[in-house]
Amino acid sequence: PYPPAPAPVAARLDPHAEVYSALVLAVRDYVAKNGFESVILGLSGGIDSALTATIAADAIGPSRVHVVLMPSRYSSDHSLGDAEELVRRQGVKSRVAPIAEIVDAYEKEIDLSGLASENLQARVRGMILMGLSNEHGHLVLTTGNKSELATGYSTLYGDSAGGFAPIKDVPKTMVWELSRWRNTHSDPSFLLEAERPIPENSITKEPSAELRPGQRDTDSLPPYEVLDRLLDDYVEKDMGSQELVAAGHDPELVTRVIRLVDVAEYKRRQYPPGPKITPKNFGRDRRLPITNRWRETTG
Image 1 (tube, helix red, strand yellow):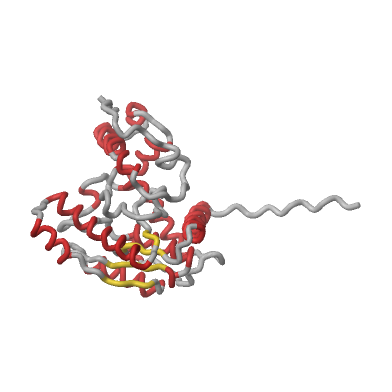
Image 2 (image 1 turned 45 degrees about the horizontal axis):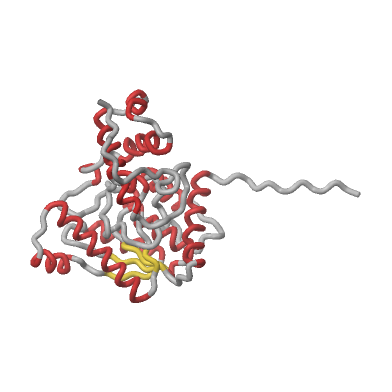
């Protein structure tokens, strides 16, 4: 009679490895258990779509990942080049579908300007992806992150259209962290064999939706390092406006961001499902009334 051997205890994963592996598993399970053979997403050359494509390729293999490059008249050469470089590194299946003529044809019939014209471009891209999904049975992956979801920085029925949202609970600053981590780490469970699968320029360049000339995310939002700290206190820790100011956040920024978060609830209700990797995700953990006349301010 010998005492039983103690059960082996697995070493704790690095935090980035743990989160990234959870995202890969989420995509793999959702695709398999819902009967999909392939996924499709728009590839802009930016970091959000690059990370989403990489997660998908790690989850189900690059041969089952379809990406569509949909340049407009405002798309920069480097963005198209970064997207093409990711395709080359990973071996995912790709096609190019320029949207300029489609947008022009629409605007000849219905005159749009400003934000309406910008959103039209996103909706045309969403229409293309959904059309290809219908034709070939792909699952459409949306590429929005938690910071954008929090502030409503997306186009309803445009870049928010899809069936699964792998990084919807990943703050923007963590998107960069996970991308850098994946470029220097792998795992036997990952099906993508490429070294440094994400182009460095996609990680380092300034974020932009490229829906108008010279557009930058910081035209509409504070720098993501500042925004994510504020969102963490407001969303994850449930701090009120006075607590946020006391914690050192700028009062005007607090009022502005709280309003952005609160009025975007209706958009979040219509967003696709996705994995939870933070203590408090939108939808199940944090769900506020869509209609609420009272607004919290610092005043």
